[in-house]
Each structure stands twice: as C-alpha cells, then as structure tokens.
Length: 215
Ligand code: NI
Image (cartoon, rainbow, N blue to C red):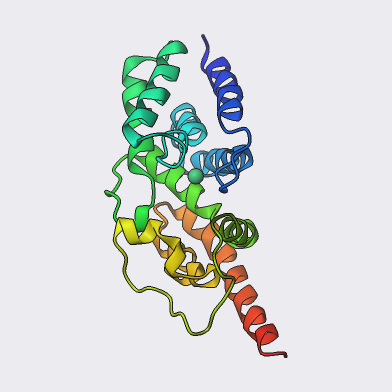
C-alpha cells in the first residue's frame, strides 16, 4: 500500500471510530488537527506522512474513549499492522501518540519534531474561536457551571484533579488551561499561530466580564 492510501484508509477508520463522540474529541477535531499539522509540518520541514498519521490517530487511544490507555494503544497498533505500516514507523507513531496528551501539564517532554508538531496542532485547536466554542461545549457536556466569581481558578493540579472538572467553572478552564497553551508551543510556526488565537481569547474574556457586570 502507498502512504497516500494508508492515510486515506486511516481517515475513514478514525471517522468510523469517533462517530457520535460528544466530548469535543469528535472527527471534526481530528480533521482540524490534521489540517493544522500539515500546515506546520510543511513550514517546519518535518516528515509529512508520520505527522499526518500521528495527527489522525492522536486521540484514538485516549482513556476517555477506551477501557484503558493501554488497550487504546493496542487498538491503534493493530490498525497500523492491518495497513502494513512499516514496523519502525509503527513504533514512531505509537511513541508520538502516547506522549503528546496534555494531562494537566504533567506529560513527558518531546524530542521528535513530528511529535512537537502534532502537540502544537492539538493545542492550537483548544484556543482561539474554536477553542472557546469547544470549551463551552465540553462544559455543558460535563455539567459545569458557566461562571461563578466566588470560585477561583485552581493554581496547580495533579492529573486526577485536572480530570475532575466538577470543582471548577467553564470560565476558570481558560485560566487553568487555555491561556497557558500559548507559552507551551514547541515550534516557531506553532508559536506564531498561537499568538493570534490567544489575543482573541483575551478580547473575548474582557467583553464577557463587561457584559457580566451589565455594561
Ligand atoms: Ni486532540
């Protein structure tokens, strides 16, 4: 199989796996991360095939979608074997998707350029206009309060606390995660793209508080 066909098959596979996903990790999130990844990979002169495959598969092993992360990784590995992906490429793709997840900022640091790019793309999709929309969609999905001025954003969190959103509000999620992402970008291209999305969120929050006070 050619690399183009493997990518096309993987697009179809991921679409079928994520049908009906409501937590913000649906197919269209993958589509946007895939597009962002291609844009950044071209700028940064990275391996387009490895970057694309990792972008398409980056959320499939998530523990939210599987009984455990290990079983999720197994599922992705079996898919790559079924597509006759070369063994060393399988190892690289699996290494990338198992290390890029955010998890409260406690993840390992990345060495491979393609991993840095997919992580940047995933983080870019969490900020800006789309990030705001996703943030409120997810807040509704888990039943978070929209905003409560008496609840302050949490300063530092363990992985478990980060997953437990019930103790915070949707607006606090901007301070606990989204506004931190700009400074966590790995690549020069990612940093540039994050700047614009970041200032859009700051602008949005400013307007939100004005309206909250009846102005
Ligand atoms: Ni993602």
